[in-house]
Length: 274
Image (cartoon, rainbow, N blue to C red; front, side, top):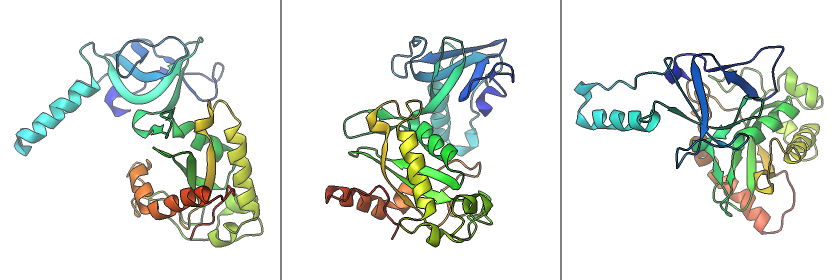
């Protein structure tokens, strides 16, 4: 992150663990801390990833010309980001293993709090599904204050760059998964090779304790959207980060429909987008 003006952790080809961002570099300090009490967490337990050292920024710069409200906002932001002991609070959820390696397990702002009050990090689940199906461009998990989780999925298509959404023609990675389909519409038909591949990826991810450490983390229903996400269509930021609230707002009616179908007794995991 830019607030630490460079790297804080590192690993090498000889000593690397999948999913880890490595050890703290010499001259930096890394700590996993309880987000509420700010106390250090025991080894192996999740908390907020914090770091400090000479590489940490002095703070966000305010512009007095923008008024007192702006200055007050930046002052508050600085206090929330760097505490009195010099710890930069990243907003990332993670843990440090016995080996000393740090694992990022989610973002606190992205945490899904289900109907039962469980905190679920969508990142590991989404990454697990994408890793298992090369045709997937984006996965977004939804389930905040809901009985279970659903996912909206986009496919890799010709012309998609992140900046632009591309068209409806499947690219080579998608065609490898579903050779019989040439467009999103064809690949989205119930029973297609694409639907079966995504379904298998979700089932495998649901069974993976690294991605889904508890039942409330699992995805029960999914759909394939008719277009990929992009900056132009406002689902992605200029740095290609997912705008979760925008996506959920844009497709709220259909997301609600997936839950309504479940309440009505529909047991299908795949719900075609309409």
